[in-house]
Picture 1 (spheres, rainbow, N blue to C red):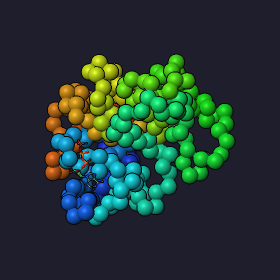
Picture 2: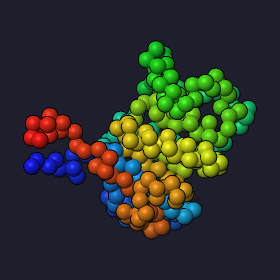
Picture 3: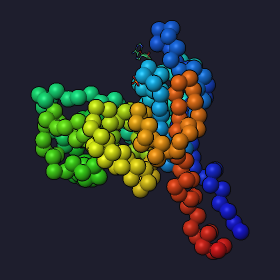
Picture 4: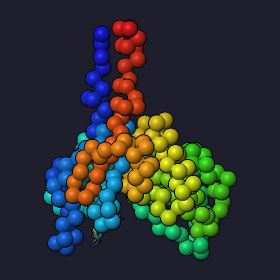
Length: 250
Ligand SMILES: Nc1ncnc2c1ncn2[C@@H]1O[C@H](COP(=O)(O)OP(=O)(O)OP(=O)(O)O)[C@@H](O)[C@H]1O
């Protein structure tokens, strides 16, 4: 019987090889090698100050890796240009209630990068914005000021902002910190639903061990210093897509 090779059909999305990082002589990440493939869900767990946010900032190009190599979608990070393929939700910053932008404006701002900043926003971009807000269930509050929303609603808006380019990789840094337990559980359900139904890879820093273990298993797949990596591999969810072949050989 034909058995597809489930391990090899998913391409690497993030690869780190012997990466280290120091802030002014204080080493935070030491000799980290790690990779995530298409549709993997990686939970990054560790104590305060372990270096989790630093790691994510290196992966999104906000900090340069001191030593070692980072590759994104198979390309060395210094050559990588396709940043629309990556959505990033940094650690929560509560918005000042006086902050004037609406939810729609915050979500739309996810479209702007160096290339699109001065381009007129067309119908298709508006549609993308509507789609992202619909997925996050925030269409009804599109016109509200972001600063007037609850923490959970703000996080949904940031997630919609990260989703507007329909990224292949979504990076979330403690997305539910400071949010009540029920909203956290709803948010986690939304994220795992997205993982199962959209073709995306997730890297998520979280302190919520219960939720991480329930989705990613009890044991970390890898450790580096006091950072633990819990992984749900893509092939646990979906087989490689070879429907015709499978059909004809069954
Ligand atoms: N810009 C900076 N300059 C100097 N040191 C920094 C800077 N940012 C972080 N650090 C230090 O680097 C270490 C790792 O910080 P980082 O924010 O990556 O940890 P973390 O694991 O995300 O922590 P937490 O769970 O508290 O968010 C900490 O000791 C922190 O004080």
